[in-house]
Image 1 (cartoon, one colour):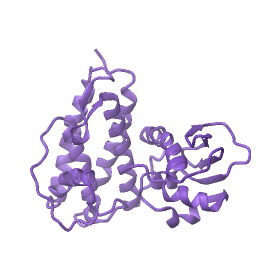
Image 2 (spheres, rainbow, N blue to C red):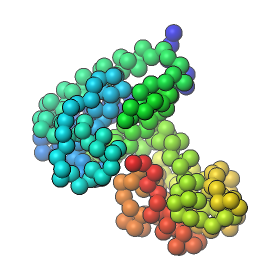
Image 3 (spheres, rainbow, N blue to C red):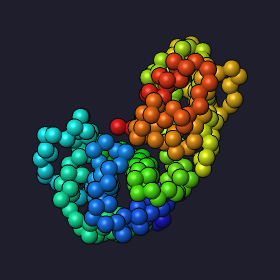
Image 4 (cartoon, rainbow, N blue to C red):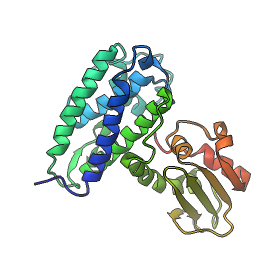
Length: 274
């Protein structure tokens, strides 16, 4: 048996991104591992530790038994505590230890994925012990690794791969989240429409429409006279949607037309990832 056709695109996207990460961090000096990223409280080392830790969990490795310090300001809820254990346990690791563990984890995980014969709907253990389908697990790993690849690229000034397979997985993951942002979080009025016009390496135009009951839907058709149009480049869209930057910090990168209060509310609630 071979890998199911539904799973292969996620495996390919994950492979492309994680190999790019390995190539980026292998030559780093010890000091470069300590550079701060846009992930609150996380350095380059911490981002790589997070990736290693989650891939080890996908492999079925036991989670580390580790008590977190009480002064980590960015650890604010149960999910962030869950993520931080895999990160904090590696904060004392040297650059060679980090690159060696990353390389070994990639080898193990690639072998597992290469030999994957289970169906997409197979139930597997997800984050925090929740049961998810294999397809969702692989989709989320492709998304997570690409987003962190971009975190590292911005920190290390190594731009690239914005339109790689992982970027397209990320686009398809983020777009369905926009109706909730517009209709529920930002409170767009019933009967209104909001247009997202994104340009750059990954381009799209989508309209979120709010019906009479206040529910949002998204489609690719053009809206005549939308309440708000938000135009930005792809990287800015990703940074906003993934909570890397606040809307008021990228005002020079986002062009807004229409209801400015609603536009500000949407930008203020753009983050859809934990």
